[in-house]
Length: 121
Picture 1: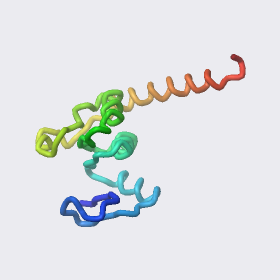
Picture 2: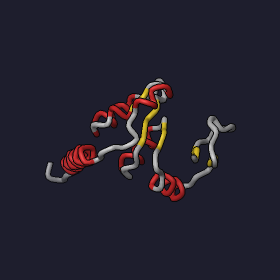
Picture 3: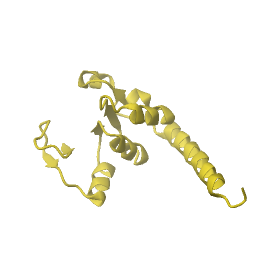
């Protein structure tokens, strides 16, 4: 088990604690993970885009981005308010529906940006 954070002390017992992962190492860690437990928006983004099984712990008052992303991708069941709810979360995820939803959202975003920056307006 590997923990990635910038805290001064490890919050959990882990095999390895990384506090200074660069972009390449961070992506490598996510893409090679068997399962991800995260309380960060970016951790959820990486998990979804790399299709790694995950659970998103509530980050507290800043949870709206995480909740919105999970709702958009149909993965709201991956969100838990506390660690006690972890036992109720499936370790496996079928990403086929979330992949379709994410692709649709990307297309809509591209279309919006294209129209917003088009010189034909």
